[in-house]
Each structure stands twice: as C-alpha cells, then as structure tokens.
Length: 529
Image (tube, rainbow, N blue to C red; front, top):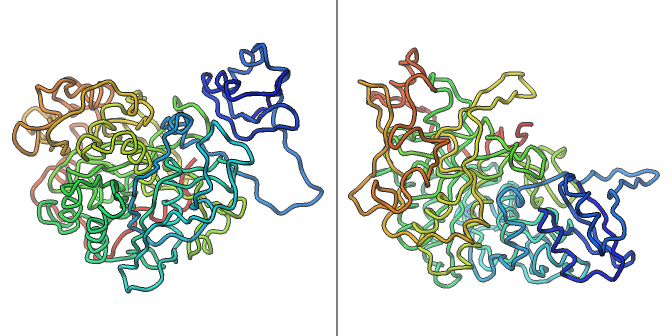
C-alpha cells in the first residue's frame, strides 16, 4: 500500500533506508510536510511507525475532484517482482548500454528522454523534468525505409518496459533500465505483421551497429510458428549469429500456452526464434497486483516447451508480463483498445512480449555492472539466480469464456524460474565458461520418463560435472531427481499417447498458416486476472 511518512526532522537520504530495508520504495518527496510517499508492505507499517524519527504514518488517501474524466493510475509491480527497484536504488540503470528494439517502432515520448536522476532513492520533483535528449540514439525502418514512429503501438510499450524513465508517473511506471540507450529498428508494420526477411534484416543491422552504439542486447518481442529445425530455420540462425557476435538475444516464448488443438495441453507451443537453444526465451508471469512474489503465478497463455521438432528445453526463464503498464505509443493498438489507456501517457498490455522487455532491461543492468559478460554468462547468471519457489500447479479462468486452465510448474512451463536481477547482480558464483545453449529433452517410451542432455560436446555450462549442477540451474521444484523431469503420471499421464506422439514423434505436422504471428497476440491485449 502507499503511505505518507512524516518525519520529526527534515528527512535525509538515510531516512529512506529503513523503508527500503523493509521492502518499500520511495515514490515522491513531500518537502512541505517533512515527509515522503512510499509504497510498502502493510505488514511492515507497525515496525516503520516505531522508527524514532517517524512522526506519523497515514494512507495516501484518494482525493477526488468534483468532476473528472481522468483514468485512475493502475498498480504495477514488475520492478519489485524481479528486484529491479532495489537495483535502481543502488545505482544500476543501464547507463551506457545499448538495447536494440526490433519491433514496430518507438514513438518520441517523454519517458524515453534523458530526464532521469538515479532511481527510486531520489524520487523528488527535481528527478524529472522536460529532458530534451531522446534516448533513441538510432532509428531505422527496415520495412521500406520510411517512418520510424510506432504505427502499431507495440514497440513503444516494449521500449518503455526496457528503459522508460517513468517521468510522467513519478517513477511508478519506470522501466527496468531507465537510462539505457535504445536502438529503434522497425520491422513490424501498423498491423503488427512482418516477414522473416525483414526481421533478419533488423537483426543484421543491429550487429552492424553494435560497436557504434554498444549494443549488448537485442529484444525480439515477436515470433511465428515452427516449421523446421532451428538448425536450418533462417530466423533462428540470424538470432544465433547475433548471439555469436557477442549480443545477448532475448526472445518471447509465445502466447499459445492454452492451445490444446492437437492434444498437447499447451506444451510444444514455443514460437520461433524462441526455439533456438542459444537465445534467452522468456515466459510470462502474473504479479497478481501485489508487492510480494509469493502469490505470483504463470500466465496460462504463456507458451510451453519443449520446442517442436527439436525438443529444446524452453522457456529459459519467466518474468512479469501480464497486465503491465508501459509507455503509450502512437498506433493502432491504443486506438483499438482505448480502455487500456491509463493516465493518458501509459498503456496496459499482456503477453510474453512484455515479459521479454522486462528481461532485456535486466540484461542491460547486468551488462552495465560487467560490460565483459558474454551472452552465455549472462544467460547462465539469470537462470542460476532465478527464483525457483513455485506451487505444484495453479489454475486460471478466462474472464470472457469461463474456461479454466491448469498449469504445472515444470521445466517446460517456467524454465529455470522467475528472474531476480538483484540476486544476479550480487551473485558470488564464479562466472561460467562454455556454451549456455538450452539442452534437449528426450522421451523414453520404455519407462515413460523424460531426460535432458546437451546439444553438443562436454564444454557446456550445465553439464553433469559443473560447479552448480542441474539442481541449481533448474531447482528441485521444476525437475524431479538428477535427470528425470517428470514421470508419465504427473503431466500427461499414461492415457495421453496423442500428446506424446505430437511432441516426441517424428511424423509431426504443425501449423499450416504462413502468417507472421506477433508474440504479443490477441491475448496480449487483455491478459488475465
């Protein structure tokens, strides 16, 4: 809850420390009343009130004008869920790092300017302003060489999640890396559609510009169905080329986790290029509109692994992606869904596209801390430090259709877990060496178990003899035993041969449509409660 804390004496920077230690964050300084507004856990209020310098604690109560048509600001806890708020309080903001947003364009919005002054530890009126420096340091339209403005409204939202400074919301809706430099490469048109060749051109251009703009991360909040092995898929190969050029590639898992059209209960629905073992593939979590992460759940639409045809273990990690608030772009999405506009400057979207932007921002913070991190080390670090405390299963009900969906928190649903960038920034583990390529899953029809193995050789980060082993990367909550992911009685059961044949069989026919499919998808407009 948001509270106003008034102090007996003029508050200093150190006065905010007790709040931060209790999991709170400062939203705005209130000099006129010797206080500040904080967002805190309700259970910490009594302890906070006992602080010797605290004069009074009260709710930040609603004040209504006699008449107003303005939308109420929505809650948003994406930063708290991954520890990014604490990272920002400690000076991590992505400064100097370039992130290529290969999407529908980026509109020139105030939150993407340079009016940022250090994160939540200094949220005063002087922290924000009308900064004139648009942090899109390069913009290019790979479709037709035309406008680089966002004609769809998707790329701006993603860019805000990566690096919005929150200047239009007093920091409430800031992105993960609010000082990062953005490279705007337009590949999606005003309808959110594109082709492989255009996306590949965008990836290629990012590689060409990487030295000039210190591009350390590529964000691909897009995808399409899988039609061939990643080893020959040109979209996957382009993503691999960027990875091998030293750029971390973060990709949406897709929004088909509810798809049971071929009897897989949403498994084997990862989209390309998220099926490539090199890239960091991201699924979507729901923060449940609360500060704590203990009640966070997987979004039922988040696509699950293993990948079709190659059975690559995906996603790699999950991050907040449901009903998240970010910068409002100029495009068809806001026009089609005006009910998702909040406070005139922000827009609510859901999907693995959004979760991908969150992870790209986290990657920028890690690259700021250690510019020498390789993409493989970055991926391993995010997976190793990811939170792995999940329930066995959860259910979600579609508010429109009333259909209930059940998710199990196995390795193909949540990967290595819920990212925690603050833990990653403070990890004491030695940086890994070798490849962090996601492993391959194999089904044993004799004993009905699934095992994982590396895609090549022994020089891999999560082989059987590495310093932290498979249990540290994936955790015992998502993997059963040292090798077995699950038995036949847990997920599919022995009475589901059709599912097994589709996922593990060799005679698979999957997807007949050649249309490009944006990972944000229709489900991404509404999300789920």
